[in-house]
Amino acid sequence: SQQGEEDPQALSIQEGENATMNCSYKTSINNLQWYRQNSGRGLVHLILIRSNEREKHSGRLRVTLDTSKKSSSLLITASRAADTASYFCAKIQGAQKLVFGQGTRLTINP
Amino acid sequence: ETGVTQSPTHLIKTRGQQVTLRCSSQSGHNTVSWYQQALGQGPQFIFQYYREEENGRGNFPPRFSGLQFPNYSSELNVNALELDDSALYLCASSGERGGETQYFGPGTRLLVL
Image (cartoon, rainbow over all chains, first blue to last red; front, side, top):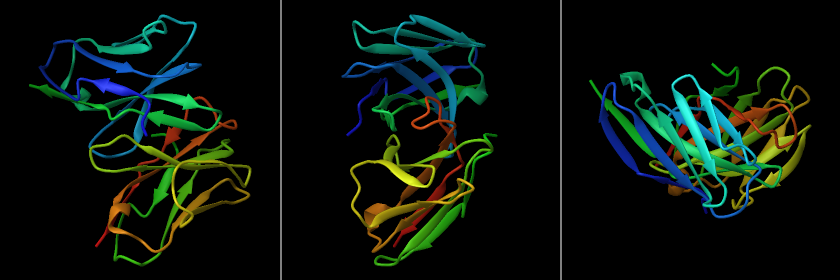
């Protein structure tokens, strides 16, 4: 079973617009991670946010975490065609495995 | 590029056959995790190897087995293939046992006919 749930499942926006994806989870976390996947290839790590952090930035990416609501969001500002991909949130379960949601498929239209 | 490599990139097998997938971890990493990703789904954890020992297993039957070698490269073996085993198989390496950030290879796409 998958712990996280991304919302929306699919998102289509115009180039230059901002894209926001949300992730909810069920149990407590030490950290939450966001990954990107292009066209069914390997996953690329984007950002890790710890449970004692509320916001983290990396370039055009901003991740927020609300542990009281058990939710996180990923914001991509000034989107580009190359941002077209699937985005996954994941939490570490135990000391071993990443538990992924089903992902958000983001399409950036030129 | 993460430095994690997988082979082969694509594979076609028939039901009942056996398959071996290979993964070379990133330099300096001693932990390898394997994931199965069905079409349109998120990756599902199969198992993890740390210093040649299995270090956790997901909800997969025993016909999914693995190995890790002294150089920390790894193999995933699947026996008695079923149609539902068709998926993208991802290998990820990390620096510590259950490391926080895992670095993924490009995957092996397996089709079982």
